Length: 230
Image (cartoon, rainbow, N blue to C red; front, side, top):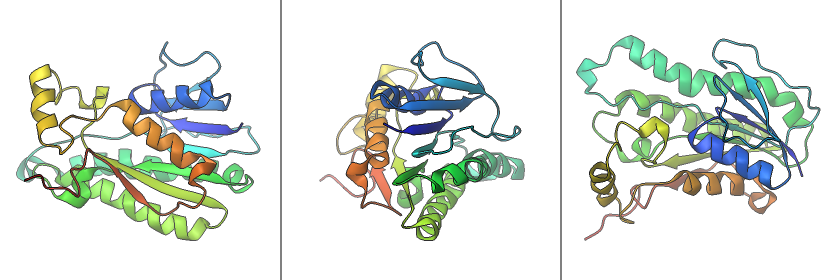
């Protein structure tokens, strides 16, 4: 069993990852701005804003760090302000950088440690109205590969790039069954993602089953990034 840190683990994918890890007997600490009664009782919750607060741990070893906060700011380029780009970059990139720096020492002390970040299918695919979020998530993919090279062989660093997933963050885009169905039809597998889809990929990459995987951007996207159905 190991020690795991989940940043933004009180909702959506982070909540599922935290609970999945805890149910396997791991020690899990969640850092988020709000709590959630759905978190397993054994999980330690730290209420904080990783962009504004100092974060740290008393753990001498950390087996895995997962950074979940993100943004879905979909608007035409001409309506995006410079501050929109800065805000998205702060949430997606600066928050991840601060979190990795905060826990890097105990990660380095741990055999087989792993860091998981999240991108989006829109970085590789190219989609209208995604300029700001794709810019910041593209930076996350760059960090993943550069940091994986720098921290090898001690720490593995990988990234998951989902397509639209049914989470609170995407609630405005999937606010009705009709919207979910229409969005699902755009994917070769004909449905939108679930938190379990992304959480399962996350726990796999954290585990020793993925001990020979690092520096990768894994598309968990219903086939959208690579397939074009006839």
